[in-house]
Amino acid sequence: MTSPLLVEGLSDAVGFVGGAMAGFWLGRAFGLDIFAPGYDNASIFGLILLGVGGGLGLQAARRWRAAKSNQNKG
Image 1 (spheres, rainbow, N blue to C red):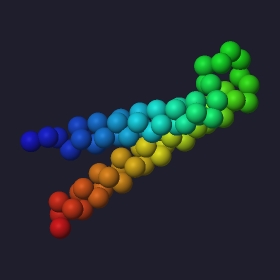
Image 2 (image 1 turned 180 degrees about the vertical axis):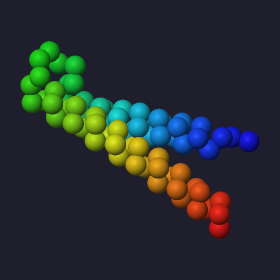
Image 3 (image 1 turned 30 degrees about the vertical axis):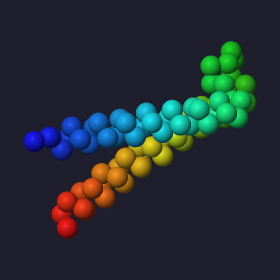
Image 4 (image 1 turned 90 degrees about the vertical axis):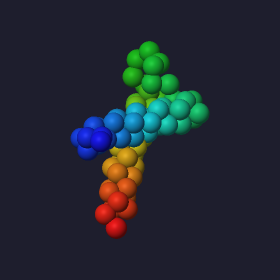
């Protein structure tokens, strides 16, 4: 049987990294390069998208886990 803590940790990690990558590629689509030399506005907004994407991905993973838990109980 799979440990609930392992499922929690892995789902949080996948959600965060997946959301951060989505934010990164969305920023790249808008021409925001987080790896540009210096910290211009485009780099800062790209980093903000990366962070927001990671946070949204983490929240999505937690909601998925809660929905799965409620489904198993009922």
